[in-house]
Image (cartoon, rainbow, N blue to C red; front, top):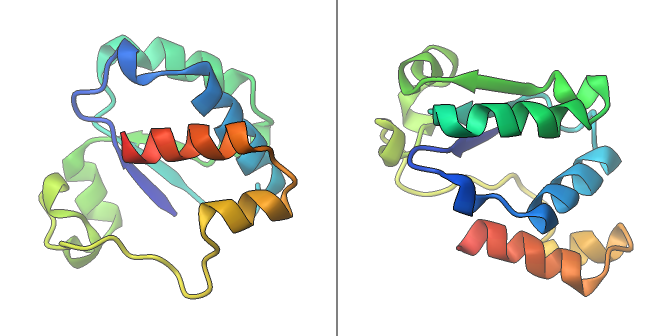
Length: 124
């Protein structure tokens, strides 16, 4: 499961490279991801996100859920929710054995541009 806080996101936060990376990365692991919760998606992005999702395979598309912060608390215990989303978790939780981006991309035979796009998406 992933939780993405989209509060305050706008058109400037969307890039083709990020979208291509997400689609290619998730296409390799469609069953490893059970749910992607996009919290507080601004109305201005909803049409764009729906279009992007329409490009994905149905099984992958079905993993995306659009919810509010309050709905998130009905799904995930507050101790696992980041403080920024009114939870109590101060640190990001990474599963044991999780590969870093570079190693994961090497295994998937993705080039350096994809790695850079992912890092930009996560860090910026």
